[in-house]
Image 1 (cartoon, rainbow, N blue to C red):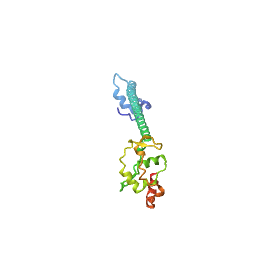
Image 2 (image 1 turned 180 degrees about the horizontal axis):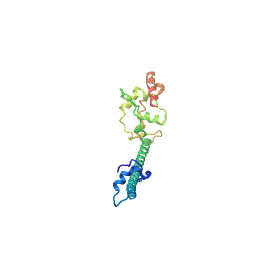
Image 3 (image 1 turned 180 degrees about the vertical axis):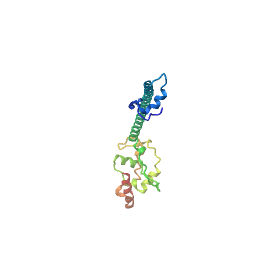
Image 4 (image 1 turned 45 degrees about the vertical axis):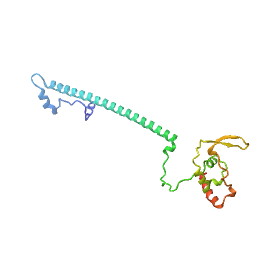
Length: 200
């Protein structure tokens, strides 16, 4: 139902006794209806039309109010859904920081990264002393050859007191190949220093 152009509650009944409405009065008057009766009929017709317009206006207002309330409720629910989704996203970002870490725009490395032996890495993680030999070319080559050791593998080792015990294969080393720091050649020392600093 279209909206009325003006509010019928603010309308006033015209004065049908006025000379402007003489033609309307003459159309209603005859031998049975006098001019004052015609004025009353015109007022009743106007009143009936105005009451119908008021009902239409009230119905339109009520419908628009219901639509507005419905739209507000729908918007509130959509906002709640957006807020919940945002809260879930924030929680997920907090829990899985690495998942949302920006990927730096770097070129693909041209040379492969050679890691020192798992023994040297474990010692570095613990903050223990590690010989520089593990970071020389010879030590990295040795680590590359022996990188197939399973970190969960166990081997029998002889302890300092002569007892034997099961120890992690990754935590053991071949002591015969390792060169002490004071016996390293200067070239090996120059190779190992930047690598151990980078590994730390």
